[in-house]
Length: 443
Image (cartoon, rainbow, N blue to C red):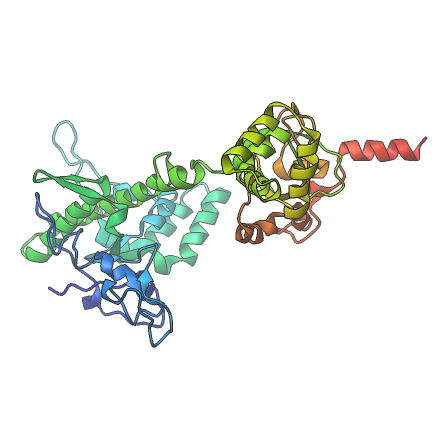
């Protein structure tokens, strides 16, 4: 049996013809140990594969630190693994992404499950049209089945849209190659000869067992094969759902490491209307500013006043307790004037353009007990907020590279609606402005 690892990019390169023998077939791992050809194979998921130059000519830890003669780039460890092994099922299944779309029109579970339903008396109950024909027959006759259930149903707008989407992408409905992603994203531990698996590994192992069952038992009858096919479909659906759920739930990667992650140089406060002229400006609370930019101010104090780091930190702490005009004028204002610090001001939930805005701090408030962000009225609808106690999150953009990346989120860049390419009505004059202008013109 040929073991050969191919990259995800190779599989989806339309200019490259991939022979069936190039797809990897993996054996089921032994119960109490990692095997050379299992889902934790060092051959297939070797960390050394992640050391390479840009073109891939030099690959492996052996070349680390060398310059590739072909692309003139350094051989170094890649941050994100692209190691993907593929399971060749030897039969077609419904792509899990499309399974849920098909399910909205067709009772797909009843159709691909070939089980026989018995009555309480033990008699075989009559089947509805297309019921229990099995996965193989569905793949052969999917268009007829899809049309039958769609034409004999209430054609709601959602159902019509789903049907048209399926027909438009019917060349992607089925697949027989299933990827196994990198082992570092699905860990397993071997403790005292006992394997502790991430759930997805158990699903992969069961799938591989089914593949071997079909491959090595040519005498299996059609009923048994149909049952294995259906079981494979359920396993692949479950793997797909597990991956989506892992990314989405609180313990998942996205929620845990991105959305739910603690961010340095950040704070929260209530927004109030401000006197600033530009929609790209924010006036910052005094105490929050001293805390968020503490390291910058310590650096400034050590250079301007010759203080030690400890003395500078104590100076900032003292000024948090009692406002000092000299410190404010010569340290805080000077820092704001020279550095022009920028922040991201975000209101949860972040569901639309404008939920996060890039703003410049142009003034730090002198009132030591004022803990609010002062913002321009015209920014409110971008946040879908108002001045009734809404709390927003401020994130300091410490790195100049971050500033360049997030400059696109300046409120002025939202004047043109990216969806319609017309004037964004969310930045129109608000009621307070209209009433003020009306009052001035009618005195």
